[in-house]
Length: 494
Image (tube, rainbow, N blue to C red; front, top):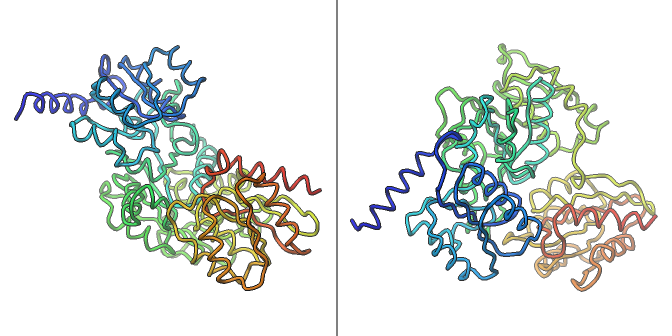
């Protein structure tokens, strides 16, 4: 063994032993890849711990760059990977912490792995630092192809109704490290995890976990459907109390069956049918819990009715599944059924997820910009008929043809946006016959043109649905930006 290899192993051993906020992180050379909200939170945390931090990133960000200077972190910006790699090599890090967007085969992480440098994601770092305060939070981890954010918010809302100090964190917008540094601490953190974060999850042990559903997505990033499934399945590893899964989705059930969990952790299912023991579901129009009732083989706790959900625009099938999954997670942490019912009936969903905008020119308009993949769009389309569908964006390597074939009978017409228009147009033309299809050129004011085209197609009683089944970053800053522009264009119709 060479001297360099011996030294690398010694450093890796020292880094692996850093499992507490109260360990000695001082003088550790850490490279942080990326200067988004996650990258900055990592840098800020490690500087506070006394590490020598250098942030390597591509796109300039003047505000965060100024903040890095203020906190005392080093920084290097370059658009080209080879320039970033040269800077990383010169810095010679002992630890690399990667923002979620970096692919597993990225040149910088590949170099680090080949060199024997430890590579973590922000979630693994957060798990190691979760004991900053004596109030150490239980982690409740949530993933899935769709519904993650809504279910994370619902679960946190239910836990709060049960008297716990709780916050949502992770992929939902608040970095896990920002939550962990709250001086008061929390009883529970509800952690939304993307497949990118799960790829580098590390060894964590959540109190409870859930994968809501599984469908092909991000295949361009993960490389294959199997790799994407394997990343999602990591959410159950090390679960202590409950593994919540969708019993109508065999892929999630298989994840639980294969998971290495803490002895005694229970598998808890949810679904829209009558639940078995250890399940949540619906009986005669009532959402019920047979998962945590002491007499669950013969009885169930009643939560809320489907009619009550309908009054709050929460009765779409995918939304009911989110409610049931959140209830299962909250019940696993001891929240009472009455407290869960109160939380459900006071919950207000975020914008841009099947958000009804009212009626314009006799047609109903719905903003479902958060449907960034085919699975999410499928859920929205299933609840509607006579749809003028605004669809398209970045398809992320997913074939949309089956989605179009499944729902062609619902469509009055379609408006296609985005850079990946060709496969969408081909699928629509194959199934819509002589029904109108409008293509919005990328050079146009995209959303205004799309709304105008949809209004021309729609007849009184139709529903115009923005449910793109694709990511937004080709023409918009985010799915929220896409939704805001859609709502603004719709309001101009009035």
